[in-house]
Image 1: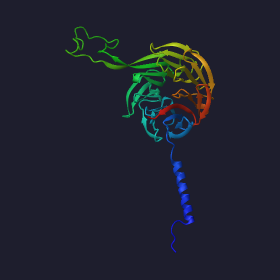
Image 2: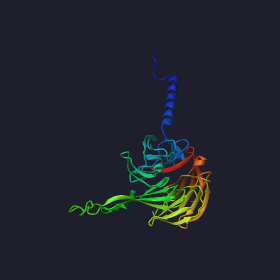
Image 3: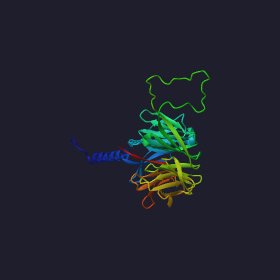
Image 4: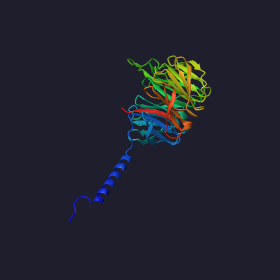
Length: 370
């Protein structure tokens, strides 16, 4: 007699296959990058971790180059850019697709070496090329560098872009200076170079008699640098949320230089004794400044108005990168020596958690997908 339908053993086998299919399919699906994601670099593992800031869990990792130091996300939150530093000798920007959680083709920065500090502003990627003593701008749309300016200073390291891309601030660690680079509108032709000699007697000067009738000289843009001496070892810095001051901490003598940006001069030098100072960041409300120390693992908290120390928070053996949560509730600290990212509650100024993102964490950034 001909049988129809499933026999018991066939039904059992089909059920097992269906369950295995579901398990393998579910396991193979990566977790989606959250709209607000914390990005953290691991120097030892050469990876970029994508972290859910709610659960503090790593949801994905993407490979990066041999010495990753700083990371930034594009304005739409879909792409990350990582500087591959090598103490000023390497020449790569790694590009990560944050939506699909994978590496994109690497950008070779030669002849500009040692990319380190990085920012995203006005649709462009700005970074320092420490080995070339320069600040560089990349147009992601074309993949080409469309602007660069030398500082003439040693170890041009971190970078901050302001005023719609018309001002750039950078620290020069070994020179102990801060550079302010400004896009300036210049009227007319300008004068001759300093020390230029005039023509021999009786020989008319080139262009003598002025420009042709009706000609009107057009204004032009030029970039002008102001160099402000601070202390040697000044590396980490931040601009206050109101844009009026720049604070930078020096690893060599532990001081904090306070620069009035309107007058372009140091108005206070705080003897903070933050030896080994690495990074400095203001809270989003501008009331506090946090300084990390690679030497002792302290986070030193200063009152921005009174310039007085409020508290020291020990988070391990070496504190490096600092990232503020946009809503001002938490700070994330890359503890390079301890192989974790510490989470600080900014209301209680206490450590409330740790995140394992891989060995030697340092550079941190936010990615907010639009």
